[in-house]
Length: 197
Image (cartoon, rainbow, N blue to C red; front, side, top):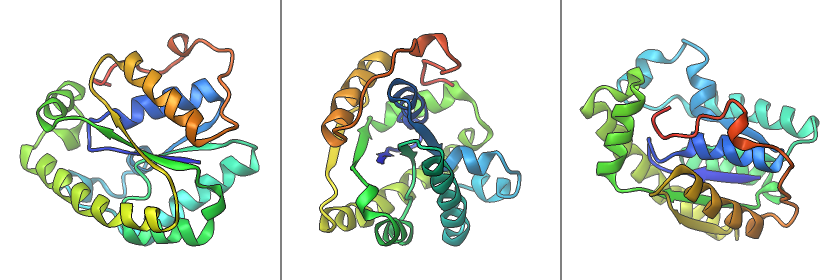
């Protein structure tokens, strides 16, 4: 199991889907799971976070389902805070191969968010709040992972999508010795190969 971290617009979704396709794994995005329900729209649009208990229950079910079906997992944006991280470490520490942080300058992130045009990306104040929450939370998450001896890798998320994917493939193979590229055409599927998805 690999965790992908990064600010909104860093490419977690694009790259998470690509890695899942390349390695034959399951991509599990907390943001995607939340957006598929309308239950939390007001909270998201205000730049606030979903209650931990709800997120833990939602992602716990998805992880269990993926593993029951024989898939390794790419976690996109989960865990989001210390509470969720502690739950993950308490319940499945032996399954965590490592975490990857996609690093992209904020000005480029703002440009990418403007391109993709989702409702939760339209208000600058909301975006800035999400950035601030992420940075506060990641500063509490990383020490927990480090104390549990979970490897953490930082990757430059700037460049063509394919270039970033190549960087991630190499790091994923370092973190998970069983990561083997599948014989498939990543560009031929439904994966959106741009950060403006």
